[in-house]
Image (spheres, rainbow, N blue to C red):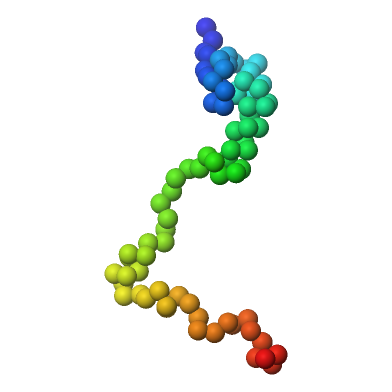
Length: 79
């Protein structure tokens, strides 16, 4: 008995076996379309940002604490 799944890209039936070259996709074309969606960030895995502005507020940090008043890369000799 073989398992049949739907191609994630075009929904065509795909037989899940060792002979299925592009499983779970039905073809190389569908595989590349899916890869392109990931590369262009059309598909993403949602994650919670580690940066939490509310936490910084609770700790007493001000946004200005994270910015320099002067450009550290500016060459004082060439002004």
